[in-house]
Image 1 (tube, one colour):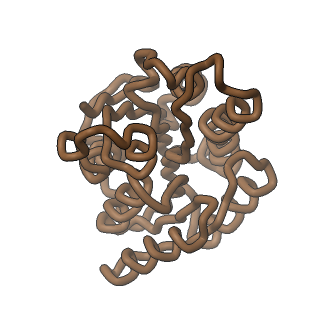
Image 2 (cartoon, rainbow, N blue to C red; image 1 turned 90 degrees about the horizontal axis):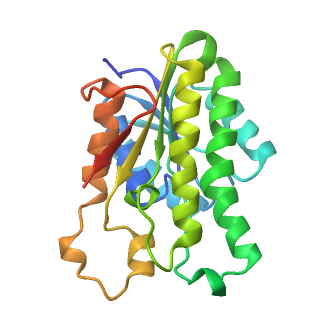
Image 3 (cartoon, rainbow, N blue to C red; image 1 turned 135 degrees about the vertical axis):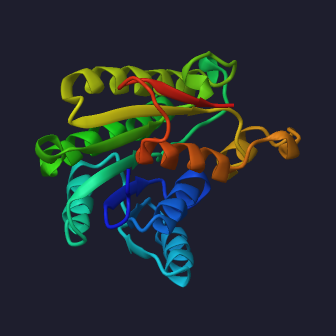
Length: 231
């Protein structure tokens, strides 16, 4: 599928997988809306895209907020109708369940699950349901298997897979809905969780981004609602 000229919203676009995905989409001629909570990170990514001849709009957004998600999509409409949504924003902590407090758990679920819900809902309401599009929700290998000291994060990423599958049944085939489940990826979040690891053995954010863009282009054939594993 030709992506040139389409508009994409990418959350968590300031670094890691989100930034890499936004850059690859821009290389395909996509007008990219960059969303995250940190303006300086978004502006750096936007500058890189612009330097390569792409088009990017920065919209600092907390995906936990209904009002901010609505404002983000309103800003995105200035570039055209949103046809691609990449839900990548996420947070994690490494703690045993017994040591995790309610505020920490709520923050992970609000960002990783509620944020996906709010962005999907707003994308559909803004015209995607009537005119079609694609949604890619970034889950994790930890959304398919539980890992010790990551109970809250695993719970949130399992939830993303359930949301993805259910939504696909509701809106396919007009709106194509998929998940991506990366294994260990060399991102700032992974390094903060596992500082003792050998990072040279991890895949790069660009590898995961390539899989996401391949989904958007229709180069990977999956059943709607399925998860593309990137290991």
